[in-house]
Amino acid sequence: MSPIDPRTHDELPPTAGLPARLRDFLPPWRGGFAAQAAAWLDTDWALLTCSGTAALWIALDALKTLAPERHSVVIPAYTCPLVAEAVLRAGLRPRLCDTAPGHFDLDTQALAGLCDADTLAVLPTHMGGRVVDVGAAQTIAARVGAFVIEDAAQAFGARAPTSTGALASVGLRGDVGFFSYSVGKGLTLYEGGLLIARDARVRAALELSERRLVHGGAGWNLRRAIELLGYALLYRPRTLGLVYGAPLRRALDRDDVIAAVGDRPRHDIPLHRVGRLRQSVGRRELARYRAHLAVGHAHAAARAAALAALPGVRVMRDMPGAIGVWPYLLLELPDVATRDAALRLLWRRGLGVTRLFAHALPDYPQLRGRIESAALPHARAFAARTLTLGNSAWLDDMRFEIVRTTLQGVLAQTGCAQRDCHGAASAGHGTPAASASPSQASAESGGGG
Ligand SMILES: *Cc1c(COP(=O)(O)O)cnc(C)c1O
Image 1 (tube, rainbow, N blue to C red):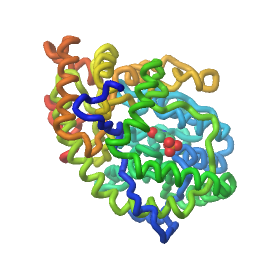
Image 2: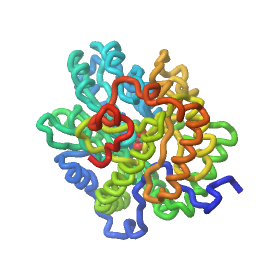
Image 3: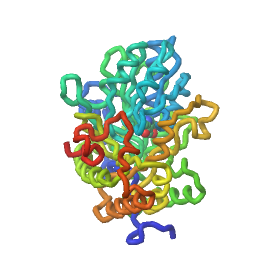
């Protein structure tokens, strides 16, 4: 048997997906998920797509029709490889922007250096439900006449402060925003995505591109419905070992980090309509989603505070005034040796500890030769120093203590207990604990408000 948590054979998920229920699949099967999701987000227009990647592809295609003389898209060098695939699929050139030090957000200086008259769009990204300030990217994009697409694939339900100080869904500040309903990202249709936009001209362009690019999909819908049913049956600690834990450990046995993380770039991006059955499941999930997020929020607040109290651990947080969602906690450790030591002890144990993305984008063999490379020191350092802890309700206090004390032990061994490691890990820019006092910068919980 695999060395899972010796007390049980439970396997916790790496992210807090919303569990689906069998009764979500009962008739009547009503469509209209997009309108329902728009209302839930407090906006009046949304477009359902078959994945987040498809949403981005459609968005880029639409913006291309509005600015056909522009050919490049600036994306973070540390993000989901499917983002690069969507840019390529749309016939555009991805430009890789280094991240801010100790962060996944676009570095403003690097961004300014990459933006020019050829830039169609820039993609600030709300990674892991952490809300970033889109303002800086917007200012830089506006200078060259580029659009802003908010990648909110992992942030459905996150809200950011508007100019009036009120809160609005992420994705509404930029020209386009998109969410993912892929398995593990929260509410799920097994695969799905949603586009939102404020401006009528942009909305019309998105609708036109969707109609031009997307057709049919009966076969895909049957397949995805079965996969979603499998998710409803198996997304629980008793059975996740079978469908998630065992393949993870097999991937680790052969040192295949990309397979372990599950972020292999895919050439083929299916485009099809989402059928009524899955839309109906989505509508029923939506009715439970607010409560699901509230539980996650409360858990994350307590756990973020406890982990950030460990010297050398930084927990990524939201920009001031924002209320993010918490599929997992994203932790930065002082260096790659400490991070790798922690993963050696925790990755196989069924506790929901894993890595976000395997690499910075140029380091995926599947993307080599297809995208540009560059030094990208911050993005590579962030990829090398971070790990994630799933924020599912199944992570009880006892299991959380295993994770916390293991991290504490690793940090003590690499010397972090003896000195203040915060300085080393928390460089400059960023959103961590902006609402807390400077001395508490890494230790306060942003979750409790
Ligand atoms: C998952 C993800 C995507 C792509 O969404 P899919 O629904 O999986 O196609 C895009 N961007 C980010 C940041 C993601 O995490």
